[in-house]
Picture 1 (cartoon, one colour):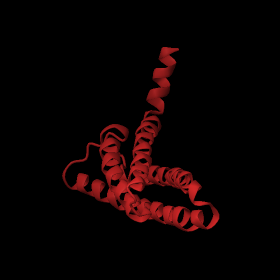
Picture 2 (tube, helix red, strand yellow; picture 1 turned 90 degrees about the vertical axis):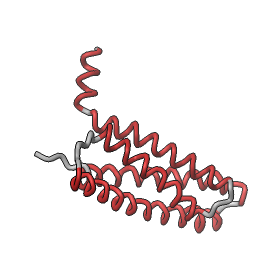
Picture 3 (cartoon, one colour; picture 1 turned 180 degrees about the horizontal axis):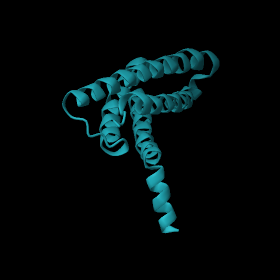
Picture 4 (cartoon, one colour; picture 1 turned 90 degrees about the horizontal axis):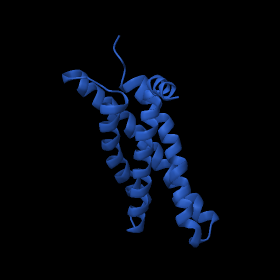
Length: 147
């Protein structure tokens, strides 16, 4: 059984490590969002700030452990620039989803007592969208393996 697990780990290393580190980045994102919200920070600022912190965390983990990038010099700068550009794109999506869901729809539909739980639900939903887009961008645009 151990040999089979090693084979599966080797075969799906990239997807599994992306899932692990993506899960950690998502957890960090959600925790930061809830902490910032508890300080009364507006949703848009909250989302931008938690994204900036998580982008730095994600770049480091993706580069070192998920995609094992060995880029140096100009290639490393291209990689970093494309990572930041793509993550800024998904940050804009996250801000839009959070603003619409937490600031517009939630207060229009729910009593104030439910808004904290609603905020958390919208944040989780938004993170699912962000994870999918970020993986595709990382795989197809940012960490391209040279042949």
